[in-house]
Image (cartoon, rainbow, N blue to C red; front, side, top):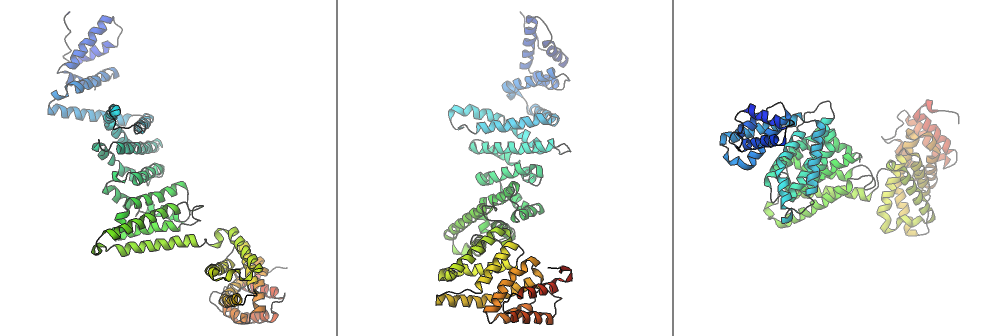
Length: 547
């Protein structure tokens, strides 16, 4: 039987393709298929396939695409340079058209599948001969995956939130491909180069609230575990990002005590960038590097208790430990003349150490944990009541000094329960006695130093800073001071005329009368009434009420 001639015109080819889908006897179907196969293998198959792609019918379009696949797999070498260039442009145009007309949900599904595909592939040992076929299969899909992610990242944003979702899923998909590229980096440099081009849009996405979480996770992950993937341009963009207003606002929220997940992620991104460039930061003496290191140092001083509240303290401490280790290695591995950076780097370390010491040696301000402040002061008060010399052993003196100053701060504060405990402590301390002569000398010396400070605190309170309900408690250390210490008059007089005294409307004569009454009463019960009257004169008559 004579072989059928292949179609010579586009109309004949279209008619044959459409006939293939119509009901017909088996031998007719077989004859049509044979004719179309001959057309696919003929030289005219190239241009016929091209024209079939422009047909309105999907079945005809599909056959045109199928013909091109057959020709490319079997006869690509027969294409001239001009024909190959034309074909490439046509295919790019088709791909662009498909991507731009692809429904968002379908595009999202394609991104999910692409990411899941390489996540699973990354679990396989690519270097073994057994799985070489898998590697080659994945490699053939790389251009499609790159086009998909690139299109997703450049998706035009509209009022529809789906556009942001597409961008977010593109970043998540990119993260999967980046880790796959790390596994096969020895085989496929072109993949790494192409993926790197998608990092700049990801850095820009940090400033977009809907994309922030996906972008910061990818970048932190890469900086921590695959820093060689990033180029110097990427690092420059990241350092520049931390100079922006957006970054300053994020940083301020973090150090002021915002330890929500997104805020911690921001701090971890900063630390990951610093860690990946720690050696360069050590050797840099420019102002931008110094500002960046100062902010990393500032993470050591964020508000809140380290670990329990301040979740960035430990990661920041780990960075500075790495910084010190790297600095030590650098100092001993370079010539003396080349070490112009040592003084700057060392100053950063000393300031970091100072910040850490402040956090681990001293608690936060009293009003940040009122229960802890109250319990600590009450415990110490009971301790010295039972064992007066307990605070005055030589090895305890530095801690005792801190405690005294801390309790004075509490007395100047506004939290009622810790303040009442502090007033009780100072009333006890003003009358403290012990049988140990050396300890008693230390106590008397401490009172001579602390008496003026206590007098200032009491006078500021009764001069208007305290609330009415606190006056009786505050009167107790005042009565003990007047009754037991000959210098009490001098201390109180100095406090009454100190610039920090709040009752500006109280005249010098009124202050003198108050002091005379207090000293004259020598700690008697009438002191409380004198204190209340003096407080009212500082606050004004509107605070008066019948007791």
